[in-house]
View 1 (spheres, rainbow, N blue to C red):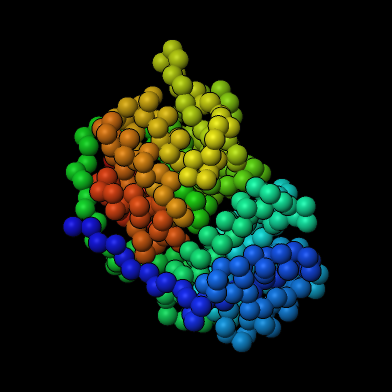
View 2: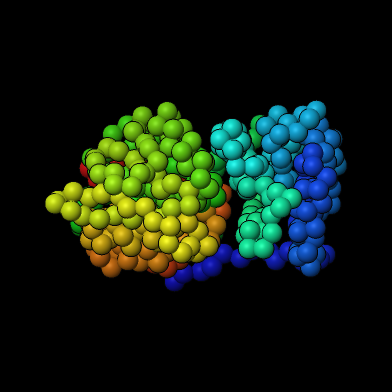
Length: 372
């Protein structure tokens, strides 16, 4: 029997407490107002114009989440990040930046250094549907990440919290596993969102620099970020990773990452599989979407799909995973203890479609055992 893990509901008497750090008074005010429109569930309790002021304010010990700008005078965000985590390593840091190549690179480095997520910063001209998208992104990340990390005992240390060790992982949720399909995987498809860049690095590195099938990845990220993610993964894992291009032919031992703002789909012609990029409607509020990728990869590879759903908010990948299983393939999900957010893998695991639910540092070995 499957049991849902309980999660405390934040109320006006117990709100998530947020500090907004940005050198722009207009942006600070915009983010603070957006946070304070949640009927007391989330409250902006502090604002700072630079990293140094943020570090001093954080010493009061009453901050759950920090929205941290990258470029600021006196002390920038990447310098302030480790100092904030040294005060409280369970403090959730969400980097905010404009979508430039430089800021995307810094944001990815910040994730590796302990930030939990990032979000594109609004501009003074952001309006209409663009602002609503920003608002949903901001509130969703603050709520999910803040609630998850508040549940942990307060830990104060001079270093950022490491990923939980596999041997210490105790599932809070009973999961019903299905038997592994005997179909031999001919492609590995991975979906990830919040916490995904670090998780992808662990999994791909554990493949040992070689895999006998193509690897396709949808990671929820905006444009520019996915280009840098591919370069970082190539450098860190020993695998040839690239942002996918329209018409690319899939080859074994190569990793293809869906570009930001494009769904990644596949077509089979003359015995070769090629990539087709598409800017169709968002699914699960995402483009690229994991479900789109999985439906398409099943159309081409039928039962020869091994699907892995890693850490992330929401439920993208669950319905696509069901299609993988119906076609005769297999699905693996990351466990709750090692996920930054157990949304996508949790929904998939609780659906009863997984042949394995594993700690992050055991997933690579599981993949190797199934692909051979």
